[in-house]
Image (cartoon, rainbow, N blue to C red; front, side, top):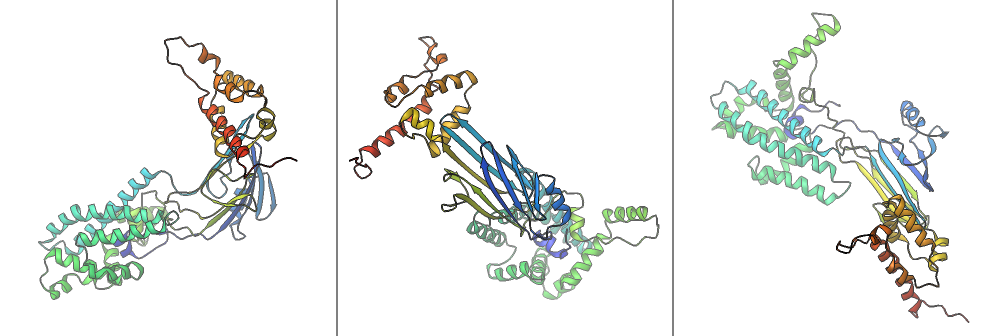
Length: 451
């Protein structure tokens, strides 16, 4: 974890790791029940990472390009998990693609850790201020205020801060609203005045001087310092960022954690006179919490998925000329909700449908629903249904035959039992397709007269 201003760990919980800046390009082409995948890595990707990726693919085309075919499970090359599924029927095929790139879907665990970190920040704040102000009779009251009010509010602000980090990829307006809500929350609870909003923003983006000013004013108010002179004397350690950080470091050296770390260093170096360890606030707070604050990854992934027809459901952009879905997304940091891509599409078996219905009656979303239904049938019902479909001919009363169909098991039910009709869903889909084609035939604007 990169070392940052001690003050910002306590005041704003702003713990951000160094970010990588890579661009990955993935191209995929379905091949029946398998899918081709070509990954182009950034040229500056470390060699060890490229070596790990090479093990996931069948072929390495050049130092930066990898190629392979996969069935259900896609390779965790960029980081995450992906799946490709097909559902085959006599009427056509439905396919579904979904992939998570990095991030963390375990929201409950993440929020528990965010709350734990908030608690640690407040514990540090109380310990640090007690180190400086503990001899003041008013500190007992101030400590109670921190344990009750500040602890509660820091936990809420921590959650707001986490939410603001996960929203930009999905809703930039929502992210801005979260940040504004956070400021409003602090104003409403008296941490600073509405007219001090500019100080809050400057402190967040600058070197911390304005945050120190806000913190100093708030502590002076809670401690009951009646004059600026008294406040300046008692709170001199908050006069500038250098003094504040030196004060924090002095406090850390008085803690049990520091003593244990020093003893461990002596043992490791086999030197009873080993120098004192350098421990910043981030390490002090996070020392035993497994949490990666890589919230703002600058890496991106571009994914292109070739499809024979536009997917009925997707969260990418459809390129009609290239017949492909395109995604271009930032890759989520490890503490954010994952970057998530998905698409579902279908391809009708035109020869089969035209042979048995005289036309294509199922395509797009309707075919997708049909394929899901068909793949949920048990083996006996599946064979029975396929036999029925393959026995249909365009010259027959298709509507009548579809309406009359019942599975053998359904026909054997007793008279007093409620009649089940497992074929209701596919019947409705096919009849809707037949009617749609009939309507087109009857429409003079779409009819083509034969001479």
